[in-house]
Length: 115
Length: 116
Image (cartoon, rainbow over the protein chains, first blue to last red):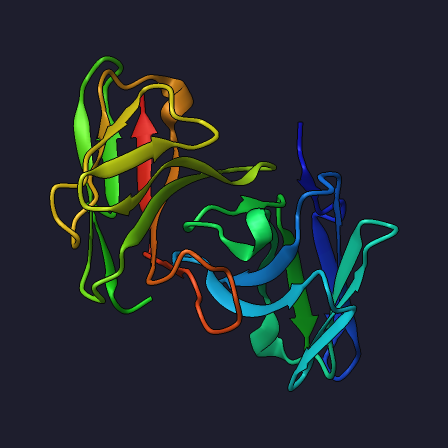
């Protein structure tokens, strides 16, 4: 049973436009959420995170929104750049933010930004 | 991905063979873990360790063994390889048990394993 779901396997956007990647979760115990970016033949790298006590976190071009009632979060990239083309993973942690390195990941969304 | 080193990067095994995927980190991180990535499944936790001498099972531990004799190393052993273990394996480490903006989990570059 997939507790973290990214229902869009892929997303294609034009350079300069907004990219919106979505993630849904089912486990009410999740209280910390992260987004990872992965290029081919590399490991995932941390992008941005949000605690369940917040509904928005912003870092430069990247903003994550959390809707706890809907168990939904989204990653906005504005403006999108060709270098943003990668696989994006949503991940979640329970235990009050104490994960001991354990995360539950979604399936990933392939983002392609066209020049 | 500097700091977490995985070897080998590519490996082909025959069914029934055993092998060890090596993982080493030079950041003095207490917390280390192994994930596998399969198409349509995301990354799934195999085993994790909260320090030298302490390991525990993750979501998909069957067919794998781990040990943590030093802080730096966390090898993953496949006891008797099966085609279902064909996957990309990622080792990760972090310095704190807390998942917060100040503590990121660092991943290695991955090990591609094919079992025929």
